[in-house]
Image (cartoon, rainbow, N blue to C red; front, side, top):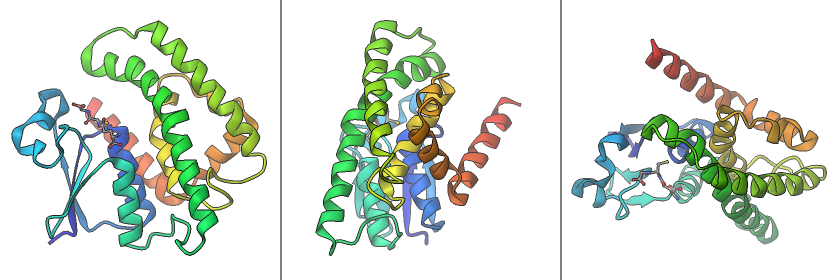
Length: 223
Ligand SMILES: N[C@@H](CCC(=O)N[C@@H](CS)C(=O)NCC(=O)O)C(=O)O
């Protein structure tokens, strides 16, 4: 019996955060159940028992332990299966810097980047609606300000939480990839240290494998 079931959606950045964590940990003993968000399967009574807000991803272990929120799931998996993606709890300062980096990612990056990708990707692909350009330009200003600061910080460390690759670096990958798909890759490649950090992240073999498989799946779906 697989260790757990992960409920997600193909192309969901929040699901991909968890898939990338599992790939980095080399963990394959799980079932991935894809819900159809366009059909509203995430709002079914059955799924709301797993996630009270009717969203994905959700993890349910073989013992019935249920967990939602992508970053909480990633951290749980890294701890449970000892993926080398977290500072040791015994290093109180490193753990605090990890929490600081995680908080910065959520509030200064993912919030505005999520608004952009919702307007420019989700609305177009899944709803057939045009983007609200006022929302995009406001969020773009915040993301640019975020990367200006990240550029300075990454001149002094290799990764977002310090000199080691951690979960926080993984947290960025799906939304940054989506920014590239939205034609906004310049936010990354125009900044030397940010671009070098991005290269270090996406050139990792496990990350490469997931990204290549996803690219192939998109091509196959379009055939
Ligand atoms: N903060 C949550 C966000 C979860 C989320 O918004 N998931 C999206 C898919 S990427 C979803 O379920 N959307 C469908 C809906 O809200 O009905 C996390 O990190 O897991």
